[in-house]
Length: 514
Image 1 (cartoon, rainbow, N blue to C red):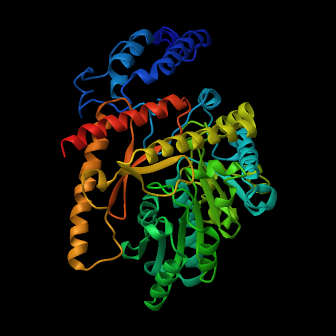
Image 2 (cartoon, helix red, strand yellow):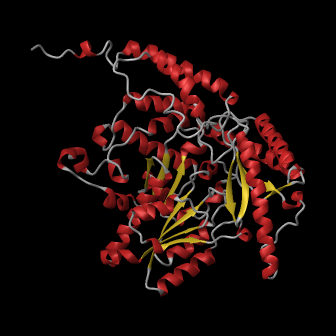
Image 3 (cartoon, helix red, strand yellow):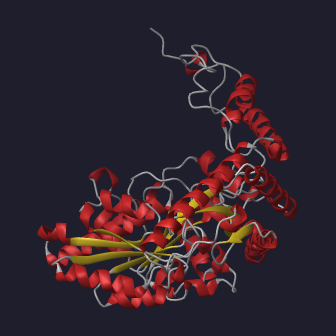
């Protein structure tokens, strides 16, 4: 029996350079047309659950299909089920900005398709990563202790969830080495009720007892930032109960309201108890390359680790979470494995970084290429101006809201997100005051707030169902607020003005029926 001929199975080699060139050009043209027309689509997908199974065949094709047919199906079946995160009318969640440089860097990474788990498996992937994280750290004016040039170091994780889990595991193991592994059930993790849910998930995975997770209450009086006094109070209670404070996650730019925790004061409390402090700046950290926003990071010098998502507001495609640590050996001691089949002279020399020991997974992508492309293609000046333009547009939207007496701004705006709502006064009700009053008055306030929340919830759903813009909400202090987050790469002032007109029109319709 003759040897199997690979080319007798495939009409063309799956990596045939000329066929790759032809199909690649088609894909670029398809995506360029998509970006040119993206604002014509409903921003939030309007499909019902299960729509796609009704449209696609029940099983995979036995024979190959041409790229032309596949792209036609993308246009007809996939795009209707896409919520268009790159639309200039997307103001929901936080941005997931993209760019030509980010896309091309991702393309290069995918094209090389290296698995850079250690230095020897692709030296350029590792070394470029150590360089770009130092570059970005210097742009942020991170203390030298966080950089490779100062005995710290950075790594590109997939998401903040991974960054928090890795640092929490490192903190856990450091603490257990001191107090004994039998005391695992005594470890306590701290955040606020505004901290991202990634912290709670990380605590679960890391084996922290569910009763030892503290989501400390915040109030409007601190703009929903975590109070150092509240942290101190919780720590003292836990110590009195025989528990061991372990880990604090402070936030620069919370998900609900973009609140900023006071890093310096929180670190001062934490260091008295040997608590590992991680700073989650997933959204707002990018803006801190601008001198006028850098003060929001003041106090980071006393933290143990710091992370931001370049895939949110830094023109770098998903996924790219930048994590810096002062003590890389803490990660390595907790996360390293050294099987014989990965042994090599470079690793044994201890002169190289093996990033497999800085993360959960073994395999890893060449993420550094896209961040490198972004930094080089746009430069610090243009990246700063990109974010400043979004802050200016958010300021414009905030001004438009303030001019309409039916609405109210709910919280101070620090970056490019506005939290607002239809005011209870516009519904013919007095504005609720939460802090004062007797029991009966407070009950009345709660009923009025619930009614106000329902109206704002109806307003947001009506806006999103229109397909013209997309926003999301938050609940803060039992109040339903609408979040307007500017950050799409293609957004212009006209889109912000149009979005406000949509809000006004839908508010008029809803208030007339209430």
